Amino acid sequence: MYKFTISPRNTEKIFAKLSNKFDIFDVTKSDESVVFFCKNRDKKQIKKYLKFYGLTDFKSEPVRSASLITRFTSIGVICGVIVSAILWIVSSFFITDVILMGNIDFTEQNIYDVLKKNNIHDYAFKSSIDVESLEDQIESLPYISYVSIIFRGNALIINIKEQLTNTEIVDYGNFAPIISIYDCKITSIKLVQGTLAVKAGDIVRVGDVLVYPYATDSQGNTRSVQPLADIVADVYITSSVTVYDQKLEKKYTGNVVKNYDITFLGLKIYSTNNEVKFSNYESKTSTSYISDTLMPIKITYTMCYEFEEVVENTNFSENLDYYVDKTRQTALLNVKEYDIIKNESHVVRDYDGYHVVEYSVTVNKKIA
Image 1 (tube, rainbow, N blue to C red):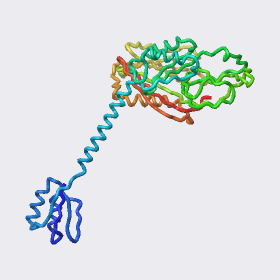
Image 2 (image 1 turned 60 degrees about the horizontal axis):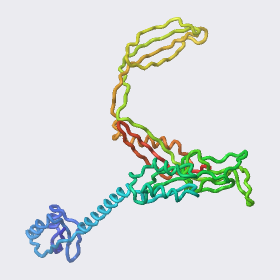
Image 3 (image 1 turned 45 degrees about the vertical axis):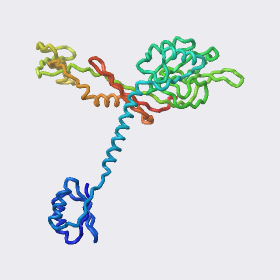
Image 4 (image 1 turned 90 degrees about the vertical axis):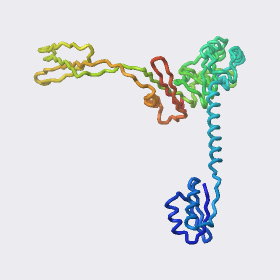
């Protein structure tokens, strides 16, 4: 970009022609001078133009553009984003935390011994962890009744439920425990009466006990009570659909074979028997009455529509958004108006010849 400064005397006509011929901008006029700017490509032609009209007392000077600095700044930002994305992708292959959850009173050290034996630690590869085998090893430990292991982001979450000790097993009397009807994570608990079986942060499954129907008084006596508690949890609602790469579609040919039966008081009085020679056909029946009062004569029509089975490609990748939205709408059918949606996500699993789309909605709601 170039800056020109010219004399303001008798330049109106020249300047009008100049502005029509060249791309000039940021024009500033004063009693002492006229200042304008042009692009680098026009500087030589503008100088010749001004000299041609006798304007020799002008000044021209290049203007350093901030675009170079902006360019380097933009490149720096882009590089930063790329590096961050690479680091995020790389980090997704590792676990950065191992979290033990649930009622762990006796077996915590034994669990850490199993993890050490399997070389599971912070920054271990996710792919090196056999979740099913790890669950079996931990579940074989004494006092363990239930184990669930999941990946949540970069964390390996191990949810443990130990067996009840003899002092915890009591006669429930006429009261039943509060049972979870959801797969969820407890976020808050306010016990009214009874004995809690879970705490905030625990991951529970359908059928797990939340509150036992007994309480122990200050003298150590245990008695049956109606369990009551306000429990709020993050509930996981999922929906999935399986899509095959190819599917059979019915293509109707337009050929139809029609038969009908006429009955009176349930007795057949006339019928047709046109032979159906189609290899593939679909039958539909309909009924009407000639009279349903004095003479209840009924006619039953049977229509046979020929079709061909055509193999069609589902074009899964092109229609992925449709399948994601379909599973989302199905999952949202189980979300109530008062539920608070905290998170939505989907995952696509590709297999040989078919694909599975799974949509998950996490809602925060009262479960007891």
